[in-house]
Length: 347
Image (cartoon, rainbow, N blue to C red; front, side):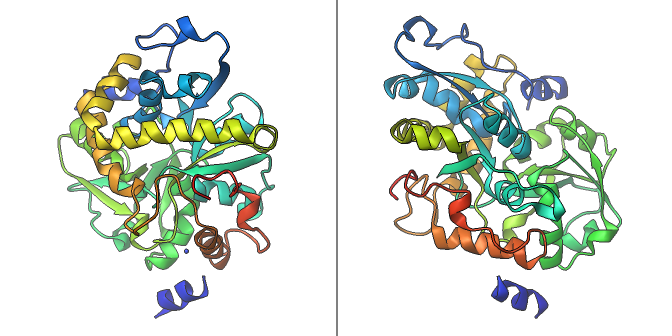
């Protein structure tokens, strides 16, 4: 009853090979590069959401197939470091575009947990229509339901959306968050830390299931946040507020090119995995394809008529209400402060 009231008031590669892939960046001299024909194109730096896993293959697909070039851009793809660090990079001018988890963006913009509010960025397209955030464990580690998290230790990167959103998830899932310990990890070591049972679980996206199973050689256990937080979006594409204001047509063209690569990647995941391998030598095409297959339903909304990339004002307002209702951000934040709806596809 408490959960209902709350809702009503509110939203294989080997270990070394796989982990190394998270730290490899695109290079303009790699196969498929458009560096030889980039004259007259605007040079853009794009950060992936987190490392160079299969879930981010769509950017390489857009580059390889010339979608960026046709839109007027010469794009350098670099590995991102999660939502908060990616926001800082865009606001600071180190990159022009990057995907971040929308909830992470709302927490940053709203001044979560008393932190200073982060401004200077705006969302211009959705990547996933539902959050992919989850707690990941392995068979035999004693976790099969949210309640099992009590008394356990979870590793995650500082400032990750999984970690920051956990108090809200715990409240709705009837978990005593004070009995769950979080320790710091990073993109390169999280999977290994879990596989070696140094922790009981890690913060991760649900699409990481094939990768951890290929490393640990045992079934993964997932506790998706979307089970109790159904209104939350997943990743969204952001740029700086200034770039969006000064270059609205360019933003729309870049978004369209990236989303075309996204649609291709989830439609033909095997092809996307092969393309990723051309740019990231240590990538595992099969694991990448498996991640994209799992990601497909998160990209294409179950609701009829919702196109890839769309963002809904009322639904974003419900996301904000969830965070405000759980006490993670103060009142006052509006959807328009974090999303440029006039630039969102089919707005």
